[in-house]
Length: 85
Image (cartoon, helix red, strand yellow):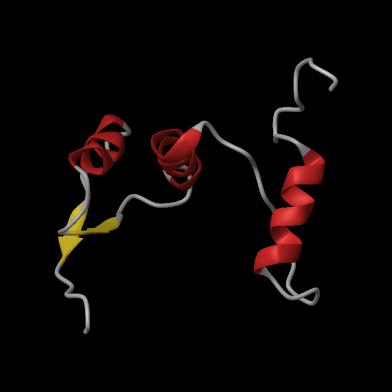
């Protein structure tokens, strides 16, 4: 097994296989690899904060999701939802 630093976007083979698993070939997908759920949310929020000044998160979510957006000076609005079934 080869060890070393990955490119900033993550392991290209892993990203390619995830795309093949989740999306049909006709769908264009750009992917990046992150450090788990909170890392992914924070990275996504940093990118989206450059494009929007408003974000909606579900009422039923982890408290950290609100904190991530608030740290980027975008207090999240919430919406209700219920699971069917």
